[in-house]
Image (cartoon, rainbow, N blue to C red):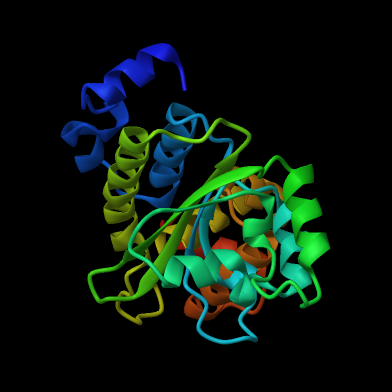
Amino acid sequence: MRDLDKAKARHGQLPEFLTGATLENVQTEYEVLQLMRRCARHFDFDHFLVARFPEAERQRFAERLLVSNWSSELVRSYDELGIFHISRLVAEVAATKRPVRGDQRLLAPKDTARAGEDGAAELAARHGLVRSTAFLLHSTSGEPFIVLFSGQCEPLEINETAGLYFAAVQLFECLEPTFAPGPGSRETLSSRELECLRWAAAGKSSDEIAIILGISAYTVSSYFKTATKKLGAVNRMQAIASAMRLKLI
């Protein structure tokens, strides 16, 4: 964090991206993503994610991921390890209401005898997830979510951690309306489904869209599938054409 930012944090001053005027204008996941980027930079982190808390062993990490600036390679590699649900991150976040801190082993299995310990730690270190701070937040309906910030920065001071937590709560509040379930009509698409279709119409591949939106390519494909079904289309191109015809994109 820059010295000026540290001084502001010590005096309880909110960063510009947390002002009411800015937050009130947020309407899409993409806008939340940009604010998350600013938040991470403000607190000197390089990576962030918001993910639904795992409920079963077979639920893949990529399927739980909502917003992130992790590269598609990092998401795919961690997903292939299949250890998110038994990670220290999940176990420690579930056990406390306080912020959880850890090094690259935070993403590894809590049980050191389980497979994936070395692979997860090495993967985290290679991508710069050396120090992390995580919080457990709940939606209005009570659904648990994990918010994780990672990087190679020095450990945050207590007041800085409090500031990060407050920022995470504010941003999560902006994010929640974007993933709330809506009406099931054919033409009703989520903001993320519309964004994927819009970028695809602009000629972007699934991998490129994943990087732009800060999610995994697996999640992009999932959005395309649900959008295609809602539009009554048989493939991605037909879905794009239908969305354009209906003036949704």
